Image (cartoon, rainbow, N blue to C red; front, side):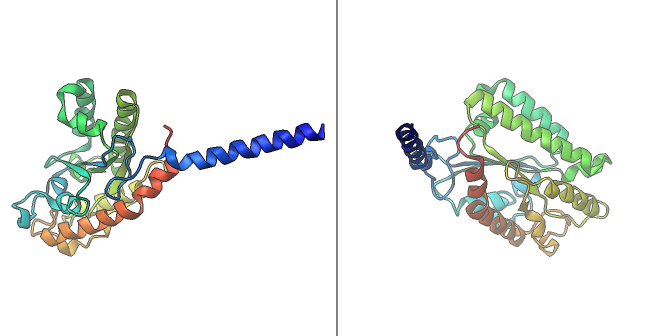
Length: 246
């Protein structure tokens, strides 16, 4: 009886050791310092948002590019897609996501999301002019995240990590306090499974252009510094915490 128990114990220890030895190999190698979540040999980042994502006000780059372009220069082996639509609000974003995944082969946007390892949603500030509550905008952001996660998982077998950005604060009358309240809701929702701690709100409003909402070139450089640090330090931790299985 004792011999059997010892043998069983040895088998259990050997099995656990084998699993531990194999576990690191289950994660695909990083590409250019960024995780390859879907194991396709590339590191792909998609940033979805409004005019701050498109780069309006970035005089150094003729009003386009912004923080996404600057961050891409820090990760030359990775692929970045900048999906910035000036004036974008969360309801049209939901409609666009639903439509694009219905015919993914006909949509470049769908293909970008289906190959993405990381998707950042930097959107919501324009909802202020609908006179709705920040909490309603946050619900739409969660729905957008859910559509991306579910649709990519169903259609490609892997879902990217989707991060909700804490928005850079505008300096326009009632819009500033409204976005601040939205940011508080976004940040309070943060978890390892659903990160919401990309703190663009830490960039000073003194780096806004005269229109009080779009950053100057220095402002975009500051946003890029925040984004670059996040990609290097926080993003890999959340990928590791999530593990290889979905």
